[in-house]
Image 1 (tube, rainbow over the protein chains, first blue to last red):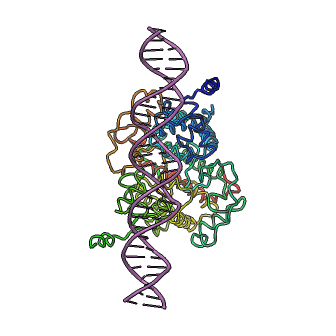
Image 2: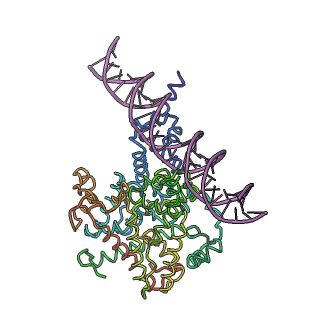
Image 3: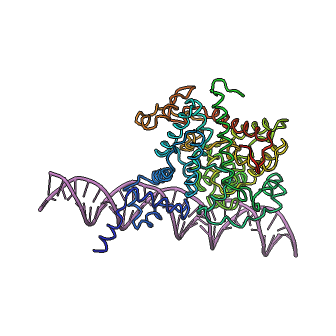
Length: 238
Length: 238
DNA sequence: TAACGTAGGTGTACGCCGTACACCTGTCAA
DNA sequence: TTGACAGGTGTACGGCGTACACCTACGTTA
């Protein structure tokens, strides 16, 4: 009896506690281990108890996304739109690196969650304050795509495998079997040329952060150029 | 007996036939309806029969991706790398629009399939032939991300919902509930300003193809500029 | 022609999943 | 004191991927 009360009292289940436990579970064990049953067990509760706080698993995922997006730093008071956007996107990137399951989860939802909408809204606000027309800001948001949330979906992403946290060592960089190198010579060349340390399969031996900032700056520079030359969708200078 | 023989003879199951049936099923009913059981039923066969031709469902998905990627036009013999890349990417985009489930499937695989590798390899080859250093080509491939395969993962994508083919009418463009507009003024402004026809929730009232080409040209123009000024990763001009 | 290995389709079964639905119990307002 | 109700429980159902044992028809070889 006393222990029962204590058990109940210890942590009286709530939507927020469920969401945070779900995020923790996905972080540690990978998104594929996030089942209502596993989550309930982590919370010391029976699976159906969760449904008193979240409608279903989809809504749980939406909530998890909002938790993650809520971790992103608020916009920095930066005079320059370009630096403001850049800093915030890099902050978002840091957050998403703590939650490697989040990019795929975000992409697989078919509607944006409130926190994502709020994030986008404030990002658009930064562009508008920087003198962008609504028109250009619109296209720019599209052009940034998921990069605006700090991740660039690669065609293949080693850090995504098995859903394990990205902090574990990324395997010995096996040096690309020769029959593959023969079939895909250009890929092989690039894999070999990966400047920094020893190369491996593409996307494994190269510096994610560098690649991300390279693409980000490429886009930001192009955007800046468009804005400076007064781009409008009606007559775009080519 | 005679009918049995006929049933067997009619279409004697093969990896290729399975893959094509799977692609058709995903195209028509959505990727979420693609189960080994449904697929087997479509093929008039018992579920376990499939496992004589594909190792498991993951391998089935890999095979489906290869089928789709194999539909992309071969590289056009274009004098100019920029036009060659642009044309091929837009071809890829057309293919992927026939298979709306494919982007998510591609992103969720943790290793590239042979057909994707071949596609990338030939794309890199185009850059190299255009005078790009292996180094720059490498970063450029990363910067293009999934866009190189003809899709830009949006944060939310109406065409992805329910997995139905994108050719169906995209719902009456419900004019964005006012309480949402109040909470996200910048989003609302952009949604309203969607130049062409009537606007709605972001990503629904705007011209996907235009947004895609906008981003593509933004990247290609920036890439061209880098290449012309002899960019190298050691001392990047900022 | 008879025996046999083998490729490929079948049937059953297991453990996992999300979740509908009926139930119980403790708390608090009237 | 009572009774509504919020919230945790137990059971059960249908669907999933797939392991495993089986059967059967065919091509090969003696």
